Amino acid sequence: MPGVVQEKLYSFFADKQLVIHPGEASGTLADAIVIGRGNILTPDGIAIIRDVSASMNVGPLEHYLLGSDFNEPSYLAKDIACVATLGGNSYYHWLIEEVPRIISFVTNGGNCLYLSCEMDQPLHQLLTWLGYSGELLKASDNVIFRARSVQCQVLHGQSGTPSSRILASVHKLRRVITASDAKVLSPHKRIYIARRSTRKLLNEDYILNNILEPLGFHVVDLDRMPWKDQINLFTNADIVIGAHGAAFSNIIFMKEGSCVIELFGVSYVHWCFWHLSQHLKLNYYACVESSSVEPFHGPNDGYRSFKIDPADLVNIINLLNL
Image (tube, rainbow, N blue to C red; front, top):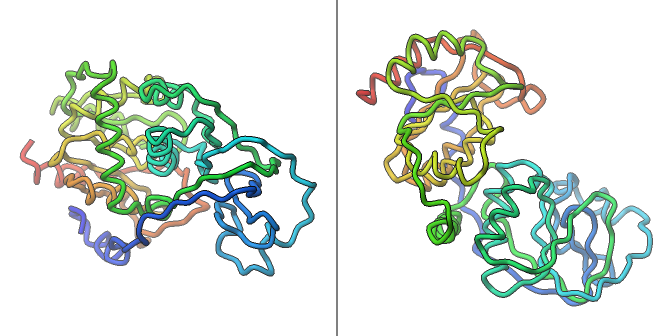
């Protein structure tokens, strides 16, 4: 269980324990059909080999990939590696789900990647570090083509519940970065991640002025920070605090034994960074806003701003003897 000082969080996280995922699997299919953001059909178009669509959990009779009339696919005389995912334009999904497979394909000699990432700066930085000089194909919802061959690989765990296989990819990524120009370490050991748009901490000024800054916490805005600087920041940090968000994906760069404190609104509590922290052997703590409502994960209420009771945060910090 994560470190919590609020009893109501125990029951929520108790139902979100780590799950066992299928083993690693990858393969190459000749003359396969690619539709949209990484869906792959057999050459005859009657079976789905890889499904990253919004229809993933429905039956075959209701599935749009098998029940819709598509244009005749164009032909691409290339051997491609399909890395695209439905959520690839989110930093979390890109870093946790796409990057491990990008590294695998590139290090095994792939030279044509089909990607859904819309974050050009970190993508090109990664490919530069990997020494990749091949072709990039950007996924879109309306694409349909038949490729000479398509290579694909299973995800490293379901979205939001990464498996222990992510560790091998983290180690590969760290080796890539160690050999790159991203070696200068940040001087900040304690960092607070600020959010400037959605899911903001409404009493942030009070929390910073009266609790965190006196303890030496440095406020960072990752939206304005180059990716390699974000990596340096988290590599050297001993403790990270902030509201739930994709920025916490960077905890994969933290050292074992480092500390993560994640803040939640009561209607959008998520377990993904707790699971990730377990795999990475980080000390994870959660703190939720005070409310008469029990914590839950409401996907339609994910961007609401909230307040944290300062006393609850202080109780966690006291456990750390800062």
